[in-house]
Image (cartoon, rainbow, N blue to C red; front, side, top):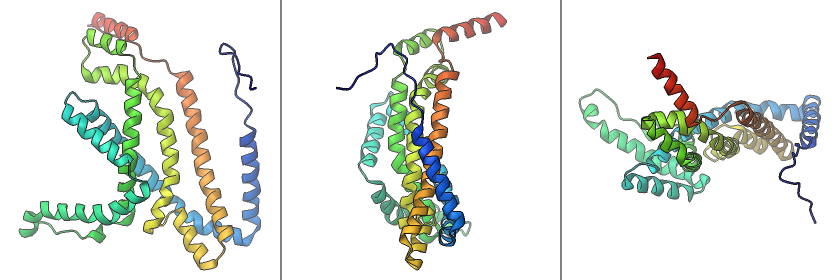
Length: 290
């Protein structure tokens, strides 16, 4: 029978022996890469895809966050039509695997988008002021970014919704009683308190996107996984190649996880929540100054 600590007892975090073990293994593998010519050659080849992986992840995550926030606000609108549109988008996109979405956007969505763009600018094309674009003008990398943006935006929208709804309704009603506008209530009351609930799952999605960015290799995008696939296919050194690919991804994901976890602890310990009482005090001081 497992013993559970008392709820009023302060439980300290365990010493991160797992991190010590991972760092030790990482140092050993780094020494092997330096000492072994085969591993060194594989590493020099695969590491060329790190820049593409980082670029795809950062751009797609920023766009997915902006789109997810917009879908969330749409789902919390006063209009039932807007709410139903947001819910329809979320349920449809969440039901499609990311890999299927990549293929759909790359080979169905991109041609449709190019055709729609050419149709809209057709008067400009006729007058000679613009030229139509071809499907090949939209690179596979940007098709992959669009697919990741669309796929993750639905999950991020739900994260924002859960965070906003976690704020006590009494705080919002009190802010209304103080005469704060809707934007001011969101900026000063809702968002500062909701961000503590939003940040942990949002950071987890960021780390997940780093891993899911490896799926863009199916489109031939030269990321870490694609560079490894090309090298392994030409040299038949599958063990060495995919060991290096795994090693690089672990460095990225574990490093990000530790940094984001530290940021989360800082947010919990270093920032105070914005209460309506403090807003009342700020408003009173502002009125006195005026």
